[in-house]
Structures are given as C-alpha cells and as structure tokens.
Length: 252
Image 1 (cartoon, one colour):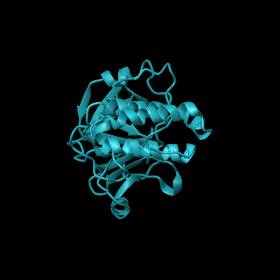
Image 2: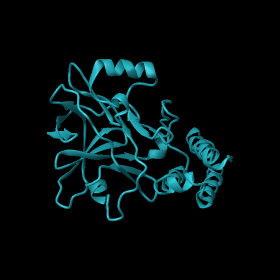
Image 3: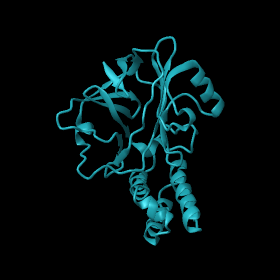
Image 4: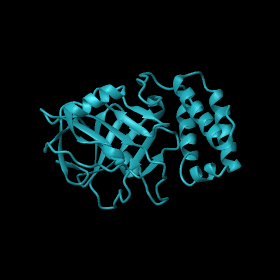
C-alpha cells in the first residue's frame, strides 16, 4: 500500500502505462497521459477522478478510471529550483525498482502539490524531481516503474518524487507526440547544460539582463548547432532563442 499526497491510498497493480513520457521544457511539465489537445484533455477529466490543476491551484495531475480505479495518466510540473547541496539522490537511483501501475483504494478527488526541487545527473541521463524534506536517512525507499523511463519514488510509503530516465529522448513542444527513437549523441549533456542554466537564482539574474547568463546560453546554442539535426535538438534551440529575445532582445 502506498500514499499519494500523504493521505490518498493506492496499491500497485497490473502493467505499466503504455504511453511514452512527454517532457516540455517550455511548459515545465512531464506527462504520461493520453490527451494530445485541450478537447481530449477535458474529456479525460470528465471520465476520471483524482487531482488536477483546478483554478490555477498549481497541483500535479493524477487521473484514475472511475470504474476500475486504475491510474489512467498523470502530468507532473517540473520545478526550477535546485536541491540543497547536501541532498544526495543516489539512494533513489540505486533503490531496486518494481514494475506496474497503480490502483486507487478510494474514489475521491485529492490535492497533489508538485515537487519543489530538481536534480540532473552529470551525463544528463536522469532527471529527478523531489519534494523538499525527501531522502530521510532512515526512510524506506521504493521505486515503481509506472511507464517507460518513468519511476515514482516512495519514502516510507509516501510519494516523494519521481525519476525520468533519458529525458532528452522525451522532449516535446507542449503536447506534440514524443519520438520513440533515441536522441542524437550529445543531446543529453546539452539538456543537462540547459537545465543547469535555467534554474534559480540564474533565472532572476537573466531577467536582470546579466551578461554572464547570456554568454552561457549563446555558448550552449552553438554547441547544439553542432549536434546532428533532430526535432528535440531544435526544441532546446528554440527555447534558448525565446529566452534571449525575451530578456536580452536578441535571438539566434
């Protein structure tokens, strides 16, 4: 038995979800869910129960089938705060993982606050998003692989965060369908570099037109240009161009 949002009970069951993760660096979310547009998303909400971003609450979205209680899909917000330097994600990464989906033990709606901090591995192969106060020394850590490359992490039975493996593979522009092939060599490291720049307090510095942030973005853009052409590469380039245009009046 596990718990989401501390009080909502769920249990592992069945096979993982069959959807590929979508990771949007412009929309700041990771989604494993069937909808691909606003209309289909509204249909999903009408046919399921759980949590969602009602009236700008900022909640994560986890939706369960009204009849079976099985997890249908979820969308998690990606934070722009780095964890405290003392935070060590290795216990999460090393914890053995089981495979399966989740079934709700209660058919009630609930609130699910998003993770507050994110960490990216040195090689860009893992994006870890966690709630503050996670990784307690005495915690029992359990990982559940609920979809391709996506694990929920539970500490003492409570959902404490999640792990997206190979995040560069899953880059999309908002609700586009994700690619199913691997990203070109070097893109994982470039995504890591992007995320290391677009994090607080760098975001505030960029908004104050700090030239050092512009220089880092420009250097990264040139590095990306030298990577073989790929829509996921172009997504990062377009996001860099947008940020440079928004805050420095220059792009490309």
